Every structure is written in C-alpha cells, then in structure tokens.
Image 1 (cartoon, rainbow, N blue to C red):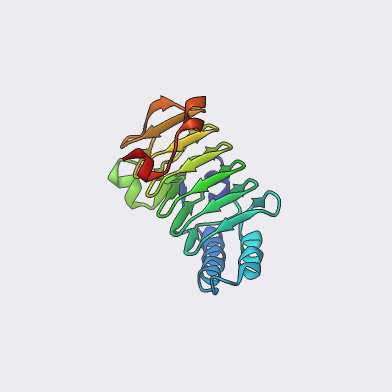
Image 2 (tube, rainbow, N blue to C red):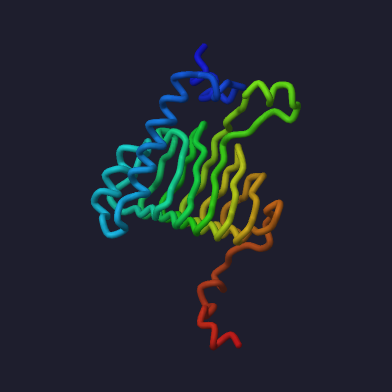
Length: 200
C-alpha cells in the first residue's frame, strides 16, 4: 500500500519521505504561489488557477482572496457562492468539503492533518488525516481553526477565534476554545438590527 493510499484511508502515513506526496505538494504550492502573486484585479486568472488547484468547484460563483495555501488541492471541494477571505489555510491530506453559501473570514484554518501523541512515531514523520465537512449557509468568523475529523452542520455561525475540535450541529451559534454551542438560531435573529447606532 502506498503512503498516499494510507493517507486517503485515514491510516498513519509518512508524508515527509514519500516522493509522490512531496511532488504533489510541490505542484499545489506552486499553484498557490502563482495565485497569491496575481494582481487582485485579475479575477479571471485567479478563477483559472483555482479551478486547476481544487478538486471540485460547484457552479461559477466563488471567491477566494489571496493569500491562500493548501497541501494538495485535489481533496478540497467548494459549493456554490463560496467565499474565503485573506489567509485561509487548508491542510487537505483528507477531504475538506464545503457546502453552498459558506463564508470564511480572514485567518482561518482547516486542518485535516495531525500527528501521534507519542514522540517516537511523531519524530519518524508519521501523521494522519481525517476529513472535515462544512454544511450549507455557514459563516465562520475570523481566526477560527477547525481540527481533524470535524463536521459542522448547516445554518451555523462559528464565532471568531474559536477552535473547533468536535462536531457542531445545524442551526446554532457556536463559539469558544474549545468551540461549544451557545444558542440556536431562531426566526428572531431575522428581526435584529445590525446598525451599531441603533444598538447603543
């Protein structure tokens, strides 16, 4: 079994010494570099590179703002109307799947990769990768870090600075380190004004 096959089967694998995985990461990093060094106004070239890099893009409407970094690219799937702001990092040793209408604020990370707790295996370069899934209509606040194996449901708001280590159900606001559900999202939220002057 190859190291890539182990990676995709959620087994411990060697990412540091496997020539095939190293080469795949080089290809992805070069595409990220090319993307990150485009003029911000060159949206056509940005879209072209992202369609080469990502495993699946749904529809025509998506926007990823540089800089953006990932490990492989082919394990990332984005839905319609996906938006990721500056400094999004996706370590996609396993599948990372985003639904429709997902908004990602600046400085967020989605990390499928992890390492053994024991130093002996960790020092050998072994790691694992567990998939991350994000549902539809999700807003992920600034600085959020999503850890390996997490599923976030649909119609969810993750508060800024959260570290998401466990699954989050649909239709809730969740925040914290570790991230926890603080309340459901209700019809009353549609009635709230976000005008700061009205709230003072």
